[in-house]
Length: 376
Ligand SMILES: [Fe+2]
Ligand SMILES: [Fe+2]
Image 1 (cartoon, helix red, strand yellow):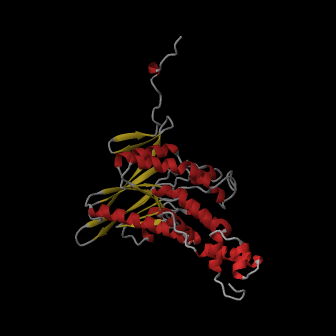
Image 2 (cartoon, protein in one colour):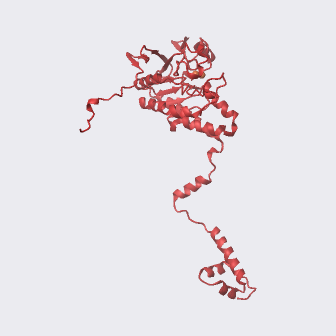
Image 3 (cartoon, rainbow, N blue to C red):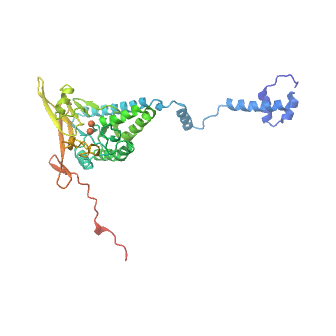
């Protein structure tokens, strides 16, 4: 081949791959040996990149698709909102199914745990009531976590100290798990209170880590879906019933809260840590409908460590829970609260139905006579 002839470089590369030397190709094409070597290098790169390498299997294809897809974590706020909306949708459809079944059903409401200042004896009673009542819904009514290290109230022992997630990590799992075991058919839900709002304020003030912290918090509290979570919402509305953490704190909290919502439907709030109740009769053409407003007793230590310097607030606090019963059709809502009394032996006790329940831990002593003795 003459020196000036146009040579297809891919043929040179193919011949090189077939075993021809650069010298032979130089003689055949009229190119210098360095030129042949350059052509071979260029062709090697070109042909490698042009070749479509088949994926070994579908799994690898899927893995690479995920790798190149934009991640939903790009906007953390949107992810959090999506989680909360999904959970609200699940709650709503759960309630709809219960209504459609045409039977009465119960909601167990537990308020103001203030973890890690939660009262363990109260939780032993909560769990027993859950096991007997088999509520279809268990509502954690806000202030589940104290977050007192983020408080702006006057200084106390824990302010600014310790990891805010440590108590959540430590106690939330056993609390929600024990309730789930006691009442396996029930759905659990957590709404925020003013203490959770301290955490939200912190994340708002620290945008450099805020979104990621909120995402971690959401994952901690949702417990792999065991707990439905409302993000920053502090209330959930059911047919003829509003459950809210609440803001009213005076001695007439229940009456004030009912006026706040217009006085036409039953409501339960937490926040005051003591029971106040207001009952209103709404008259219609057909019948007298009872509308109840109640502030639910708390589930925290009395006093919790963070109020040790504000003890004046706590003498009226009581431990307990509330049960709302939705009658078929959903028009009529019953409410009963259970006050946990302190007995002389230090245990808490309440009457549920005809039964006295106490907060004694289960007897874990074993029968020593059954122990094998060591051979002499
Ligand atoms: Fe509270
Ligand atoms: Fe509160």
